[in-house]
Length: 113
Length: 112
Image (cartoon, rainbow over all chains, first blue to last red; front, top):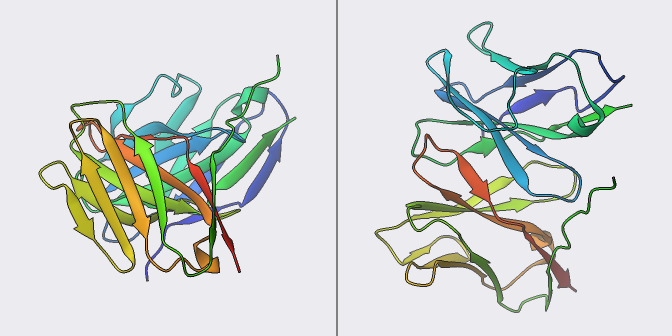
């Protein structure tokens, strides 16, 4: 069964550094998402992306965050200057359309020290 | 300050029994609901979904019930197995570009 893949599985970075989290969505999916889950808390929406532009974003997704689909297969989340509170599991997801189930990857655990 | 994590409600069932996991959703405008299963170290895994024009939907060993009057969703798992042990989340789509709002989760523990 096709799946969403994310790399790396764990990223450790120092506060103030830039990080890029990478995702390969399911190949025939057209909608892409990033969610995050701070340890012990709910899964929270960050951003949705369709047709090479952001469709929706939450209040969490401020100017420090950006997303990009640099080629036909990758979907990336960049955090420009990481803060301690950015430490979380970051999940990429994709769906065939805006009204169908999201399929999630296994996440990247980001630890900011 | 220190952030306080969620205290997950836990449902403990005997292997072979049926499990019922409940969820109250918040937005009466939500029209699409999904149950996800999350095992340790993995991402949320789709189980079953239901749209607001239905009140029941069945899958393999799972049934989702939707009560729009009281904004309540439940997931029933028949003949629960040890592999069903996980955290279960309900999620609602408020029709804003598939932006899901997740519930707090319930931990299901299956005793052999």
